[in-house]
Length: 231
Ligand code: 6GU
Image 1 (tube, protein in one colour):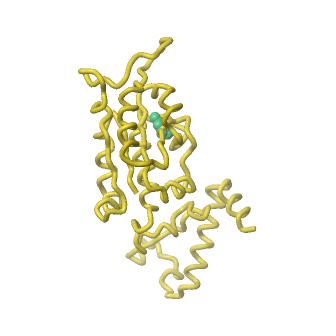
Image 2 (tube, helix red, strand yellow):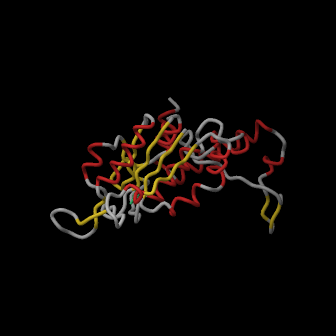
């Protein structure tokens, strides 16, 4: 998979994409991430990428020209499955959307900033608009890092048995069960006996029960979905 991220603030994306699983995915060649500084595609000598909104009002609007030059160049080099715009009015990201995107080959992610991008960018280029939840961030960069992380860890080959996505919360509409490690007792608090029993079948049953209990208590909305899907 190849991801091209277009941003006016490339430094914001550096550390989230260069650590842990996302970094290993790149080192192992499962994913190639290219961050493009929108100012490099600016047409003016001050490297401006935004301007006042027609009709007035507070906040700057990102110009279409630098974005168009950047996307046109990328699309002349290869075909993209989606051109994604990160925006609070997009479709809310969930595990299902992350799964869908994880089997795509080439993605462009455009990070919005200030009051957003000129509407004509969305009309001409954008095929998918994504939000990461109902709250407002200063820009799309952190949202793009969240999206990239959620998608990349699902790319076939990125996770090993140890980090398997199969037991993640949400993967089957259930939250994950509690986990424990050594010591077996801390301050009088004991690890549940079943986990030390060596009885694989009993452990599996316990984890399923706890996952269901947790989902019922914390996320009645997910619990309903889970039960619908059990047929
Ligand atoms: Cl994608 N962008 C911004 N600016 N704020 C957000 C968001 C995106 N998703 C949730 N809040």
